[in-house]
Image 1 (cartoon, helix red, strand yellow):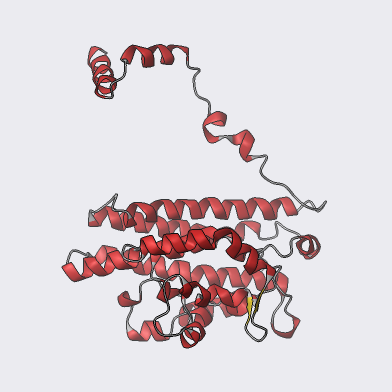
Image 2 (spheres, rainbow, N blue to C red):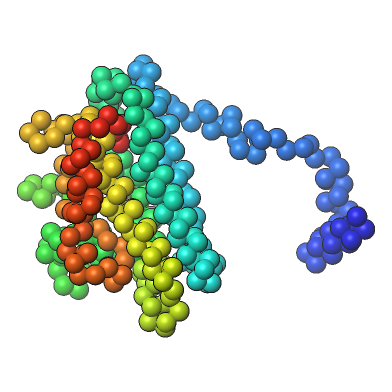
Length: 321
């Protein structure tokens, strides 16, 4: 005990503080409880249905779980990209964490299997327009922490983008513009306009910060200087595959269950052509292209993911917003 008190005394004196003040404060402090630490009471008040359909609560809660999971992904990516961790073993561990969080994003769709009425969903979704899962800013932050802006521009965007386009203006050509920009009319949907009004400045600022330090840039440096390990390479590939192929495919399967397919397809609440927006073979979003073979890049979103998608299209699973 004497040693502990001495360490406390040394700690606060080093900060220029009176240790007795903090010890007296501890004397009066109440023991912490689980509900206060986790903020359970506040957390359980954050679900605000807009209709009287009981299953809307499931829908809201599930999407909040997605956002909390994305927060964990960003937490790990921040530590790598800002240099809080430099040891290759620890970097591999953190990327593996990101992959497990991404696994959760995909597998958690099955939690809602038979957990939400299709009839109720078809009604309460009408009250959500123009809101859309497309408007999840954290999805975009994950992308900006992970890779170059050029890797978020699909083939159509690359053909349309003038040579020498600045970093700031590249946002006009990112793949997610396809979800909210009518190229025949040259107009943006309300969903996209609202999204950009709220977040575009933040996205541009982060993209500038990450231009030379995103995870892909870091990995290329490790590869060039010979410090990258096989474990890190495999971790990068697992993360890329899970986030950009398997998760979108699972999301697409769930959307087909409730929104149909082909000519019978129902528009998403944000008005997007969600099938082409979600399918990885159309968008070809690849975070770490230098770590895939030419054949793997050419068949991105086909092969295993494509077979998995066609075999499970009719599963009873729940849709995304």
